[in-house]
Length: 217
Image 1: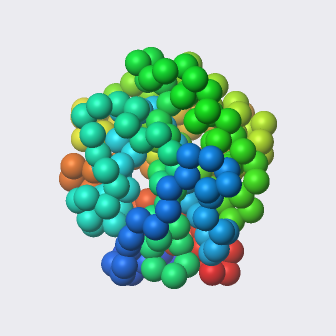
Image 2: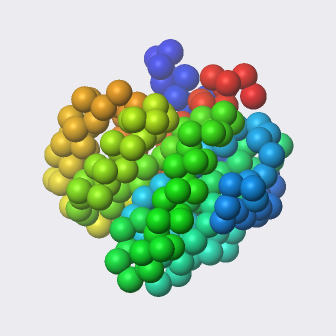
Image 3: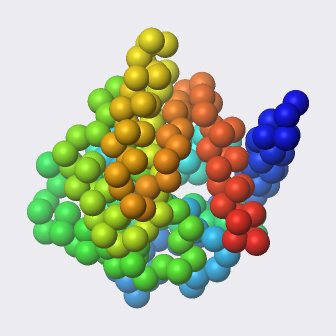
């Protein structure tokens, strides 16, 4: 193994251990005054309503029912907080882009999310989930524009990667990374995942473990 291989293996093991312990839902917030106190490090997950956020959180933690999944897009209507051990919280953010949700609710969610992103010093990164089958849609790039403007660090995670043919993977990732290269708050590396077969899950855990190490937590 090279030194880089050793580092990667060490981060994967750190990620495995991080998510091998306790994982529990502990707070939900529909308004700013209901946000829990800032403790440790927070990692938030954002994406369209049907992108598979809850399924990926469940895959990360190895618990099938930690985050509620639904066949009805737009079900997550608040910020849901999950404590992972003593150092980390995962935040499931309301999905966006589902037209059947009342406009007033969408505006309320948007206001809450923007306020959370701007005022949460414990937030280390937003993982921006994109459906691997479709790549960026205009509503995704609008959200990325907002994250860039707010100077919130984010990284793109492709979901449903098992749906891509092997020949499509490299071109899809290259295209997205090329688009991210011009964005000031974007982390350059894209992670391809699938909650069905754990594709990319160890790599995502390793990325989170690296963030904790960088913050000295």
